[in-house]
Length: 332
Image 1 (tube, one colour):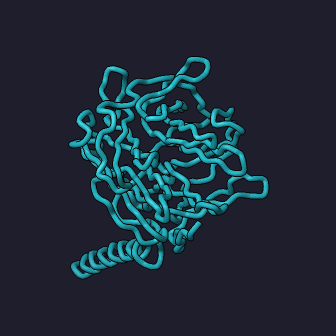
Image 2 (cartoon, one colour; image 1 turned 90 degrees about the horizontal axis):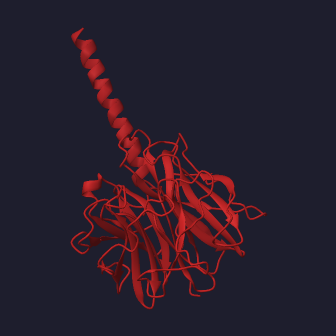
Image 3 (cartoon, rainbow, N blue to C red; image 1 turned 180 degrees about the horizontal axis):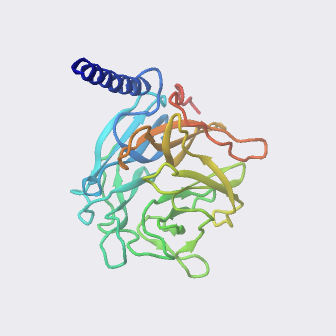
């Protein structure tokens, strides 16, 4: 009996070692997903000049989400960390739950939009704020000294903002949690929300199945609107999309294009899209949860290629450990 217990104990240790070794191989071998170490979610991928940048949420308990890091790369494979590009010492009204950054460059300034405090009603302090910096790696300071949007409109929690630059030069912000999505028109200085022609400021564009995490881009004259569905802590988190002729829709859901693969990872969602300037190459930047992880905050940032069919519909994305290879942005 003594030898049997010893054998079982030794065998168990071997199994645990093999599991962690296998997982480590997937993370540190020739495979490129996740693209960098650490628990990060809600990644915003963008190109500035000849560099790729990713701005994610630091994935931790809400009380610990008091800063944001960024990552830069010249080839999509090797990433440099820029620590604490903004934190709650720079944004006095933000106390916790700094989420889902979105960034744009305008007039040689970098504007970082973020949500903070996870407000649950109009009486709480928080919402969507803006940081500003002279460099993409910060440091960012509070641009307004208060949230840009701090109330619920059309049922949308003020989180998960994406700033969309339309082909006519107008900047819009698309945002919203709690299964409601709004689009607002930003003033030229980003200091307030401008009214539409009918006098309203918040237009709801919520498609069927929408939960959170909106993203929009234009391809061949069509507006692709994407969002996350399911619960962010569960395996069914996913991304769906719609296509329209206007940033205001109407958006009829086409279907899912990103979801879990039980052989790779679960909870694949809250994404962004990088288009290589001057090409028809598209990459989806998203977070997912490693197999075997049960902590809701244990999320990693990954990149995979995104393709379209002949009709312009997005093909379902295959999530991989391999990720993508080196891709340097050429001179344009």
